[in-house]
Image (cartoon, rainbow, N blue to C red; front, side):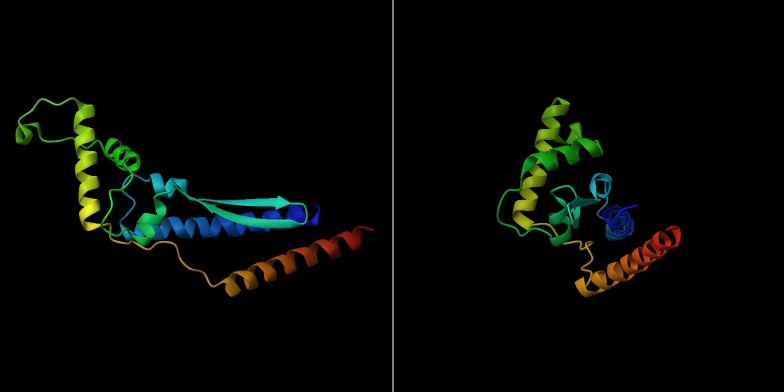
Length: 159
């Protein structure tokens, strides 16, 4: 096995552990309503020649869950509308006194939720743990060093 393949394996293992940690953190904040954000969290390892990197991907609105959103501007409605649909939210027809279609109800709810966010903002629910970069580097270097050392010894013993 070549060095970069081994590096990719080690980084993938590291990414899986930290991906799970982010998902657990999100669940503990109570902000995991539909599971969409949780399911979108992925660590991706990229190997380009002699370089390797880890990238964290997640749904765009993850930043707003993590950092919150200040009041003052109307939020993008697409994500809110999808959230309304995913949750199966409807309006109480007795209260509104109208016979609205499901789509009209969803549009109305989307607008009302957006207006509330515009007025009040969104409370932050931090779930992305800031891991000290020195700690990450040390863990990766220790693991890579140990694994690569074993590979070198094994390759010398074979020859």
